[in-house]
Length: 112
Image 1 (tube, rainbow, N blue to C red):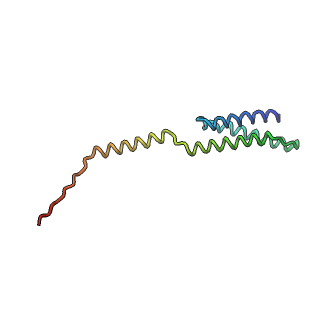
Image 2: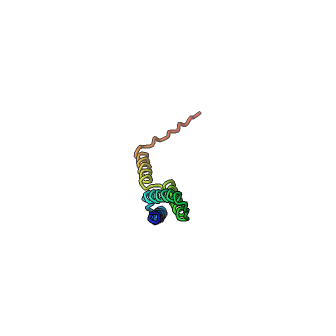
Image 3: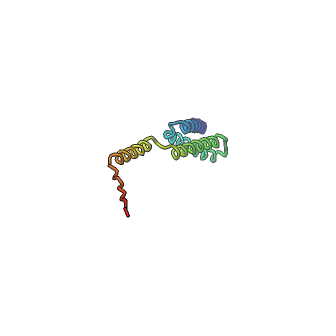
């Protein structure tokens, strides 16, 4: 059971790290959760048998790295839909401004 959890945890953590560093970062949440659950289960199993392994630390390290990358990309990357909405709104504003005639300024000359 312990070895199966270690293998599943490593595979999920590596997949999460790979997905977090590519354009498919939104799909990295599922492997992150899977690896985290496997890591927590390994901690409980290790406490019962009094054996602590480095694999638990590596799984959590990869989970933290991929979670950090995912959060960073969600915060910094602007989605294309937001950009198109902004450009469309500025284009319509520019068209509206160009369609309305501008009043001409009349200067009155005062003759003394």
